[in-house]
Image 1 (cartoon, rainbow, N blue to C red):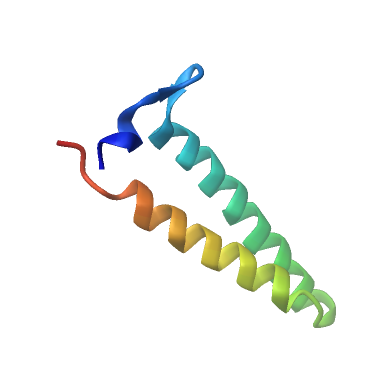
Image 2 (cartoon, rainbow, N blue to C red; image 1 turned 180 degrees about the horizontal axis):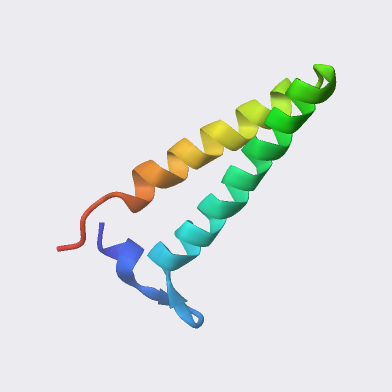
Length: 64
């Protein structure tokens, strides 16, 4: 997976993935806050968790 270490703008794609992962984590935490507060937000929580897991799986591939 050499494409993950290519530069895209000021950073490499791996760094952009880390920033996207932080956004997915924030989405998951927002969904968790909604679930704990009033019981709504399961979809937001699920989207955040699934997106975070997908991004971690893509980013965790070692570079050659």
